[in-house]
Amino acid sequence: MSNLYESPRLVHEYLLFHYGAAHEILPWQQGPVAALNFPVRTVTEMTNPSPRRRALDIGCAVGRSAFELSRFCDHVTALDFSQAFIDAANTLRSGHEIHCEVADEGRLTMPFTAHLPDSAQPDRVTFARGDAMNLPPDLGSFDLVHAANLLCRLTDPKPFLSRLPDLVSQGGQLILTTPCTWLEEFTPPSNWPPNRTIDWITDSLSQHFRLLHQKDLPFLIREHSRKFQWSVALGSLWERL
Figure (spheres, rainbow, N blue to C red):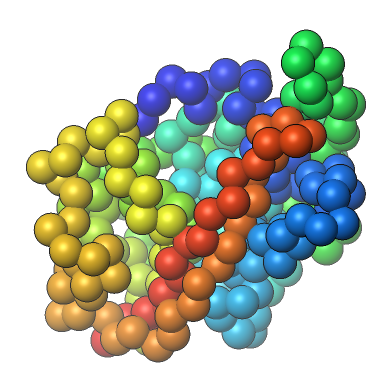
């Protein structure tokens, strides 16, 4: 994965994306407000938040979805390839705030402070650096696995997809979201899906999983106060057979 995810600029941008209030991310009343709070909605809109023992968040970035999972999961293992993202998540987990400067206009910046969400149970979460294409063999299995907007950022998604049957317990659930933005800078075209992404995922998972639910999930990333990335992720919920 590109080193851009280790840069302070991207860390601050993602902290705002994960922890910013609506008016801090989108200062325009006519903007796409339905796209806010994506790292929370990938959990709350894709599965029933009933008590679970173990959850895994792969590609957790700076940790907001992992903290959302901690509300109803006894333990959450959260992994990301970026050490800078993991360091930021661990800082918040310890109860410390992170003071950021996010782009406003030109050379101007806007101050923003990220802090642990009120509903989080930080003692239930463990953050660590990990490679989704080469996960540790001793991870075990989980009642819920969450992987948001990860697939199309992997050099080769196939090793990750092939590992999923071992990671999800029988009767457990898998949440996948992806904006299907396949780019050569992340994934060689030879490793892109040969057809629509949802058909390719289904072909890869159908032997071990049953599709329960599919939903479009818009999300918004602020680049500066007048420029945003508005995208729509394809969300799918699967049950391990």
